[in-house]
Length: 113
Length: 113
Image 1 (cartoon, rainbow over the protein chains, first blue to last red):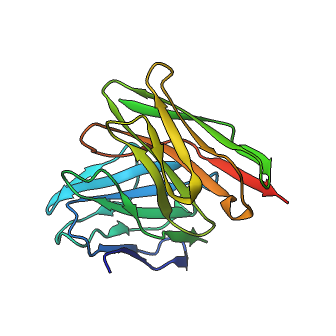
Image 2 (image 1 turned 60 degrees about the vertical axis):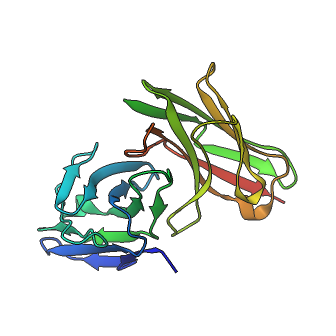
């Protein structure tokens, strides 16, 4: 079944640690996105990609980085986690043409202590 | 540029009552409009979308929304609320051709017996 997967679902980690949030989709979508969701639930786009080797920063500035080496994989990395990075991170994907729907993963809830 | 305003961070209704969640958008180009629902600790699920054509769109779970260009609105309705409808609802807009979604701040729907 085509889907979009995020791991881990929950992560509690200490300040200064390096972390990578994984996102994979099996739908062959070209476009992939990372959204940060505040405790107040608002969603902000922090990174997006329109294909392999393409990455762009989103509307909200983020200290995280992303890579897109394979179509199906769009990991997000924080080199040194801080408490201000505590949030929920949602990954999404969409096709380039025709279909106009974004599919979302279940999210990773990150807590930095 | 696109933006979305959702009026009311919380809406409370009784089971069986009409649900009305308001969304107004701003877009410099013809918009694509979406409503997503988020249940606790879950990702976002598409309820319905407007791209072109019929301005009254029907979605899952008995929800529908009407695109009103003159009012720049895309309000979400359901004739009769069910307890299972309690969730967070997000309105979103993207430019024609679907580049990236811009979300509203969300409305939490509370349903009482």
